[in-house]
Amino acid sequence: MAMKGFIRKFKPLEILSEEQFQAIHKATLDVLQNVGIRIEHKRALKLLESHDCQVDYGNMRAKFPPGLVEECLRKCPSSFRVKARDPQKDLIMGGNTIYFGPAPGKQTVNLDTWEPREATRKEAYDGLTILDALPNVHFLPSYTPYFGFEGLPPVMRIPEICAAKIRNSTKWFFDGYSNDCEIFIIQMAQAM
Image 1 (cartoon, helix red, strand yellow):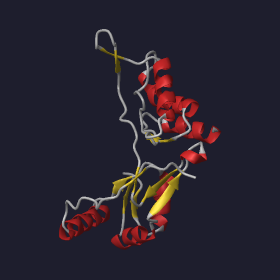
Image 2 (cartoon, rainbow, N blue to C red; image 1 turned 45 degrees about the vertical axis):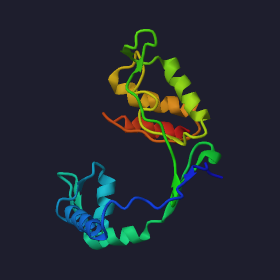
Image 3 (spheres, one colour; image 1 turned 30 degrees about the vertical axis):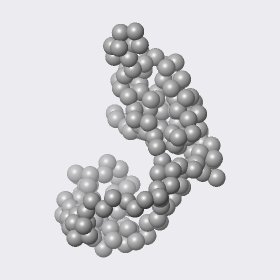
Image 4 (cartoon, rainbow, N blue to C red; image 1 turned 60 degrees about the horizontal axis):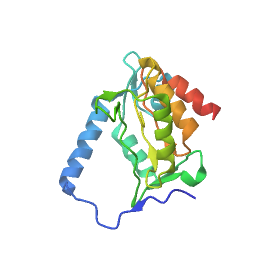
């Protein structure tokens, strides 16, 4: 079973005409074919090269043939499951279901003076516990609830908040990375 989310019962906004949508799609294919994207992962670059992408290993850039992009888009499912630690908090992405997550904060405030200050470890952990209990918060984005807490060196902010989410929430979450901290985040995920 997955979290319920909210079902969209109205037609989505149609901001772009079909012609505008197709122009964006064509321009995207052009950028992917002629400019490409930087991918800092040699194994991923080798995989892309084996599927007819043009790869520049020196610049870590891959260029995608339009046919490959179109084929991959056709193969994409219309929905997919993202797994949380608690299977009842998995999310089914796609279709008409809408999920909500909190906006992360960099700091909190002193409630007496309203001056910004760094959160304490306890406040960060308590915040995650509350977010985990709220039924209308479905996932936890990067840096939630704060971008670190007091006493942490900047290089440890992302891994420490990731560890805090592991300790205090069973919902699906994701994290950003900087300064190779993804290595530690992957190791924490593997240990879970």
